[in-house]
Image 1 (cartoon, helix red, strand yellow):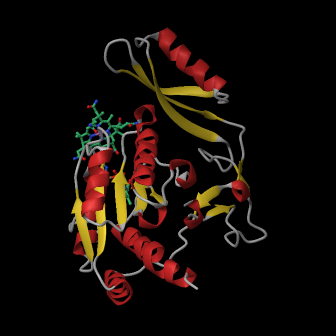
Image 2 (cartoon, helix red, strand yellow; image 1 turned 120 degrees about the vertical axis):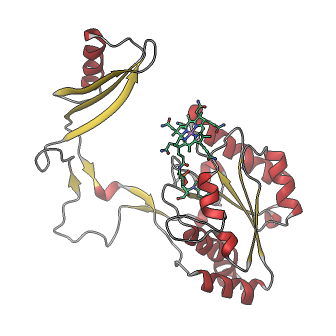
Length: 267
Ligand code: B12
């Protein structure tokens, strides 16, 4: 599955030979190593709490660490912001990201490829699974209103969209995918407490593997602001979309993964 996701180590071609690949954080002056972190400690706000925050920041490698904000939040909890210097360096040549490995198409182009090459509507089923009720993200991708001036997939004439909404169970999702003869299943996971997004995604991909044979399984796509896009293989999905995804990117990926790259690979 993960063969569809291209992991790119470094960003070849992005850096000219003279460009720095080792960088440090920048706060007040270039390369001063200054960063800012925020966290909460389960202690009431007093002098000792502030000292505890600085101690934690020191242990995290911030030296000096300056407390810039401390605010009690409820009984026995304090929220902190600490500003300080770290010695860590970032090696840009070792950064791993998932680059877009498909062309970005307009709605018109997506419709044309689906119509010409698939010769039927492409069926998409979407949902928030588990206890997750954060539907704004999946709605931004699926609903006509879309996001950031782009219309969602419902706007695409050649796509048939079934949006199941919030708190859908995995068996319900599998059933809907079967009923709608889904070409792709789009799942949103926003809550990451106790790694709920990872557990739910694994449960979902395992259920589809069990319920449908390899050639009949829909494309499995998950999205949400806190996913690591390189985890497709570990989660058993075809693609992961993160923060700031646009409907156009998703529609273009669907065409690429379900139509154009498949055609290209057919002998
Ligand atoms: C709105 C909101 C709510 C609303 C949700 C309303 C709704 N119908 O969606 C309500 C008030 C119900 C709510 C409830 C809760 N929330 Co809330 N909520 C938010 C908030 C403020 C904004 C989320 C949002 O709408 N973002 C805008 C959308 C457009 O962005 P997005 O989701 O990232 O989606 C984009 C991409 O990620 C991607 N994408 C997302 N999904 C998918 C899927 C696919 C297939 C694809 C391709 C792409 C994709 O594309 C989208 C467009 O670019 C966030 C904080 C924040 N600022 O993010 C907290 C937040 C998500 N909530 C949080 C929490 C804790 C809760 C509650 C548990 C609070 C409580 N104690 O009751 C409950 C949980 C309810 C539940 N059962 O899920 C936490 C989650 C923390 C964590 N680590 O998990 C956050 C981060 C707040 C915080 N800082 O603590 N919440």
